[in-house]
Image (cartoon, rainbow, N blue to C red):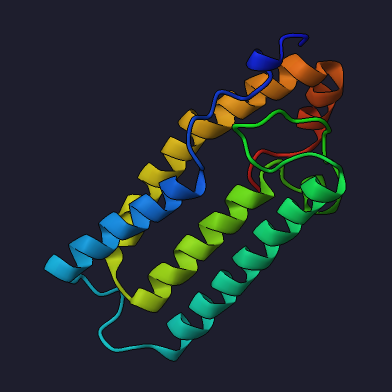
Length: 158
């Protein structure tokens, strides 16, 4: 890739906005017509919600930190200069998106409403099509066999 203007994934917006948008739409539906996951606030839902939220933040933040440490950017609209294949990247090719999904699900449990949960598959489908597919094609063009070998070893999600 010698042309710097083509040296990006083609993702035109911050991926966290897809997660936030889905959650905000679900929260809006919750405000209009609450559909509870369980009748009363449940201790297990609160415990799991906070656990998922904390784990998601830690996973996404650690993954972004590893990008910075490798001298590349976690921002998909900017050129990637290195493949990161250690830390959580040994288990998932997308720990930032897995982390954001955990934050989304944890927040849904804390909200105790089914609407964000109902929209979650739509959010994941959008992330897969509008972000991950473009990033994967870009990384394959840029890093070739090294990236293909990585994708053969490590799953996309978990």
